[in-house]
Image 1 (tube, helix red, strand yellow):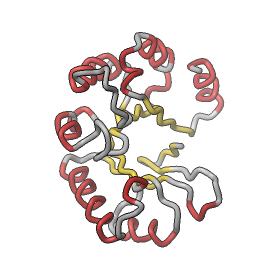
Image 2: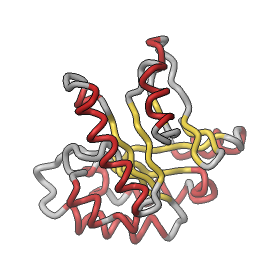
Image 3: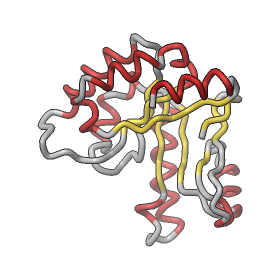
Image 4: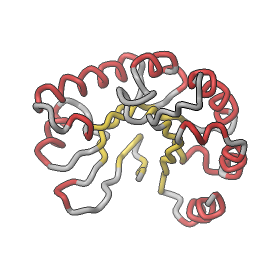
Length: 179
């Protein structure tokens, strides 16, 4: 996979990638080999730390510190994915706020809530991101009216399947396209 991404990166100089890493993958030494190979493109790759719980990993904070120390040397930025879910709770986010570049909030677990309740969660995470000068991304955007509502709030980094057309929408971060 690393070789494919290397070739893809060479052929597509304007494309930026976000790679999701499950906490269980942090345990694998090969993860460092993988990202070491991709170092030439580390400025175009964000590592997203997924929210999945792993009952076999007792101290996720300590493991993250170790992984972060190793991979940050290669020049990667880190994103905490799906904040407020799984291991990516407020405690984890606050503990690692200085080590990340972005916070990503997904609306998917909140689909059954009233829109005004969902917006309270979004507003709180957006404010936290602003307080610490971090990028804030909302994912799960499926319709133009909700996208426009977020744009009116100043949330211009959005990801999702707009209008149900089934095509992945790109996210603009610092004038760079990420998918």
